[in-house]
Image (cartoon, rainbow, N blue to C red; front, side):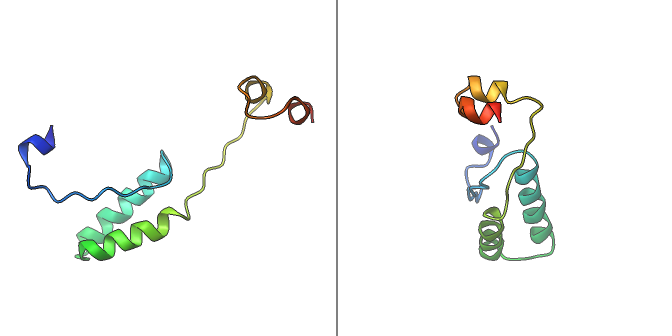
Length: 79
């Protein structure tokens, strides 16, 4: 692992509140800020402030799977 090779690595874990594209956008923002020379503290503050703005939206063709999985009631699936 990378950490085994570099035990002095300065790593901070940020909860992105998402996965997929949302996480990617946060990583890109961190890389841009680091490349522009921002201090680590400011990068972390910025990432924490934008992570709460990340919202995911998805669409489904049928509600059957959501009903069978217990995510919605039978009434909501029917409507």
